[in-house]
Length: 208
Figure 1 (cartoon, rainbow, N blue to C red):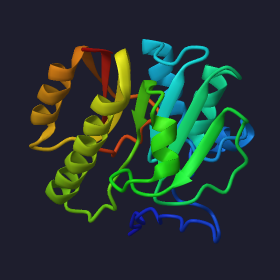
Figure 2 (cartoon, rainbow, N blue to C red):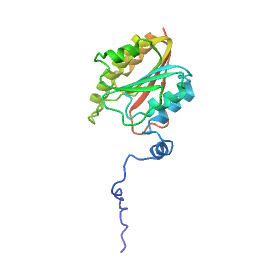
Figure 3 (cartoon, helix red, strand yellow):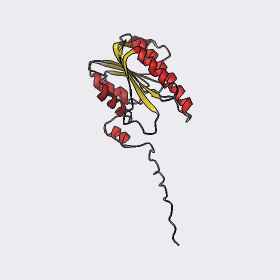
Figure 4 (cartoon, rainbow, N blue to C red):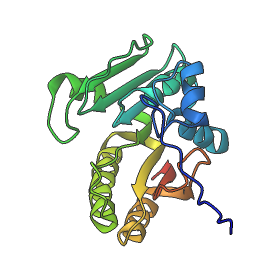
């Protein structure tokens, strides 16, 4: 009597990144440090937030994909400033600068650059995940609140805001806050987000 054998799952090849996919391979070809660049590209195609000569602030900018892409959109007449707890290890175009630090901690050099205000504030910040959805969502909400508070301070009138948030019980509270600050807001999940991810993006336009 023959018995059907259960299919054997292949073990990942040694040294192969289990998170590698079409977007991460494409990022290497396009010379971007991470696949996350395609999320911003989708947002830009849909909402056209960043324009030539804009000033852009990128919160949580490491490893640098959003920073580089935003600089390309703003052009040589623009200015893009990134901040992250981690240092960037890539070369940046002349119109882009990155600072290592906490957005909540004062820094004189950074504050002087903030003085000119910004047309767009981007936040792709994410907490160190624990695997507990409620905890991760709550930490994400805290980061998003910090990003929104800073955006209120530095955005020009009619400026735009992009913020990644993990969906959880505070999601509606955050979108309500965004609605108070901007003329319009949209909820958008780029196709390049990993399917299993709870992340989603809030886009606010027309700062009041």
